[in-house]
Length: 443
Image (cartoon, rainbow, N blue to C red; front, side, top):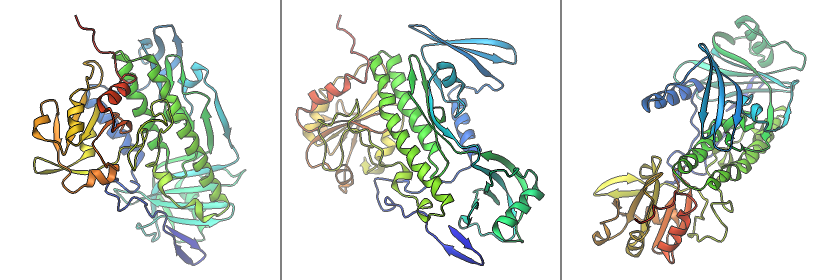
């Protein structure tokens, strides 16, 4: 970042990633990506799965019974009613699902604190190798270079009674006044909006058969770029649990969604608020980014699926995020993250004794599948092992803190749900019971 103070530009490093040299974190840095590209990627993926997004629809009512939930939707063809087992409102900070369900949204919106956000081309010599900030008291202006083109995202804090500029000429005049740089010219505006800090947290993430996720459940400032990561993690956490319950797992599994995600949302809300308030005070620490903003240290330790009495390795506890590791698959290098990729559970058996114990673990035929992976295991235990990998360089052992034969069970969202070094098959089977449909009764 370049901090412009009069004619002087002070360089300021925003992020010194604590994970940059950690091979357990293959993507250690923030990825800057326009929202429309994220939206396109999600729609393309849905389309590949046979689902098309419908537009020009509005939710007008939600009703619930003991067994179903119904959503009344207005469309271009009239009113339609969708009956389902569950409804998930991922419909943003003004969530109609949340309002219809009566879930409180506690917090505040400061109508006097407004920031104009503009995506546009900025002529006048701004370098594209860094962000730019003009921290004048009462008139914060920032310019962030957007990828895949020559546009910047301008952030202009408006004064309490100031009317937001609307066209290129007015915005250019505002930018020149706020920066003191008469060479800057704004043109080719592709998007603009007025942002107000909305700092709120839903009182609950569930009301019976209705759930909320993403901005519908928590709204905070954009400081630190937390929103997308939060929404995706909410959805993945809830998604695999819904799939398991629909397949026959215990309904109580759905209660763990709020128990795990609401505390995380509260922590992120506090962090982003502190960062945002620091802008107005010209506090340099508000610009810094580290492991908290990266959200790589989130853990569900002590939660309903990660009791504090569970076993642990020298580095990891149940409830922690499973790190990456480099392994060898029949002579070909592979990453453990590629093994986890997909909607399945993964059981990792490190060592020959663990591999034998893993063959004794029975997995239900309903719901998500189980991928059984043996690491440094003999051929004799390959009959019920799906993948056999070699920890040729001790990378897995180091990253996971393994010092003895161990079975680890990893959830579809990449978090560890069981660590077993003693009575491994029994301990793993016990952890499975709360996550999966019951086994079919013998005839």
